[in-house]
Image (cartoon, rainbow, N blue to C red; front, side, top):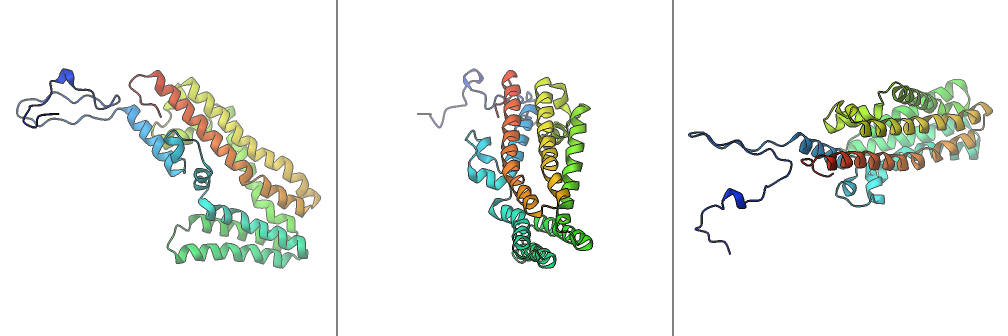
Length: 272
């Protein structure tokens, strides 16, 4: 038992508080002691952990397997999934049953408006619901102007085309946008480019995300030009969250792995 009247232990017997903390500066006579400053590696580890928790991957940060709950949180929870899927599903079902364009367009717009009002009434963040409502509105206007139900899906083609092209070009020229996003999210800006392992992983991930958007176009555009609204709507739903969610998990695991490996190579960096 430690004697409460005893003085502090000698420095040689004290264990360091943290492997990634900078030792405190020597105390000068007449000056208060200076606190230890956190190392850059510690700050990066904290940034990555915080970013991952914001994305809904708290279990993975703590070394646990990614659960269904964590995956749901990363995609906005049950409500986020419903808001993303239901309007398109309602349009597809309504058109398949009635083959009437006007009711099929009104139904998803009403669904989007209801989601927006509910979030507003509960004083919750309305960004996702508002973005969804605007997207549905643009899709409905395009289909209404042309009189073609398949034009409801035109904005999705534009989005996939732009995302896929930009990501692909960025990877080909050596500036993968996934790496740029991860670097700034973690607070190391473009320092990852100097690490061959990190750079390779960021290029691979950028190609993978570009491939997702390009694959959607390759499958859905022929259906659009064929006027096959039923299969176009079905493939859009199937190639949405069911493909997005696994790729999101793979991306997080690859980033986590390469940063953990880099930290293990440097003694004063904590493992993530």
